[in-house]
Image 1 (tube, rainbow, N blue to C red):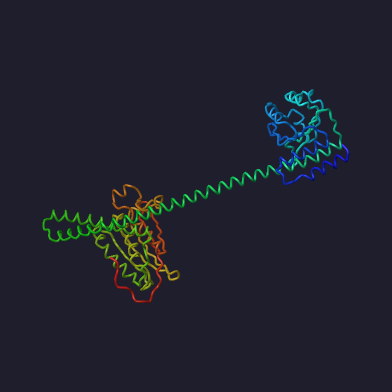
Image 2 (cartoon, rainbow, N blue to C red):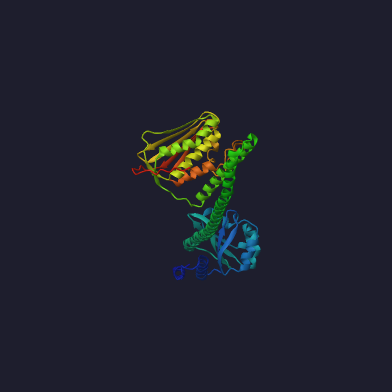
Length: 440
């Protein structure tokens, strides 16, 4: 090969548009090389780990040749191609039809009259991954300077192919990410719609419970009213006992209705903070009077204590605070058969938080069940409901109201070891006059 041929090859490749798709660019480069070096065909062959070949592109090589080559079930590793891959050097074969290593392809070479083949290694990071090939229909000698040029040209093909693989990988990843983004957006849209439906259903449920609670309370109050009137007038002990059972059951039902109504109000966000100035001491005295009778009936020691440094007057929603403390106390009285129930109130002047500790000597709560007791309609187990009654709404309402007031409830308990609830609520000190009325 003359220097003029080398110059023409370089000039021809330099005129190629580097923006061409890699397969087309390599095909155009093969065309330039074959035209200037007098080869009849050219191809680029990629070889996998099993020694199977795959045409990346080809010049003037008929599709029928490529298809027949694919149909030959033989590894390329025992052939000169394998030598190129293993040794990373150019291999030249003349009189290809007589080489036993190429026996599976002999008929193909005869049909296309191929006499000489040159295999040049393609490299990625110094490791051969295929060959670029030149085919001649006559015996063709290759000289050393031609081998050097072909080796240099193989770098051009190698870069184009490797870059194409990277581009393809990036394109596939981009397509995957695009599909992933579309899918995530679809899921997010569905979740938003599902969330709206669930929110709407929850709101409808809560509104239904509110309406039903109001509707039930009206006849229930009438029943309790007449039951009380009959109790006062009845002199027959048996009838009086029956009326008392009706009265007690009615009050229990009314308590349940009130709990459901409170929970519905919380879930529909219809609550507001009604802040007034009030005395915690008076609120607890009022609460204590509400449970004295039950403590006497059950023969329980019931103690309410307020710390000496507790402010005389604070500002906050006393109705909701009273509801929280009463619900915790109802729970304590329900599950305490003997011993004591104690309420301690103390104040942190640094944070403005009031602490109400309600402790009892009841059945306690196992560690593995403490994460569910604040859930609506949940109790430690079904036997609890059968033995002690109730629906499990009291603690739920207490927890939600405490959170609504910006506070928290903590629990310390063990199975059979009683329970201690600590209610923490922000109650700023107030020097104004307190409101005299206290929630029933």
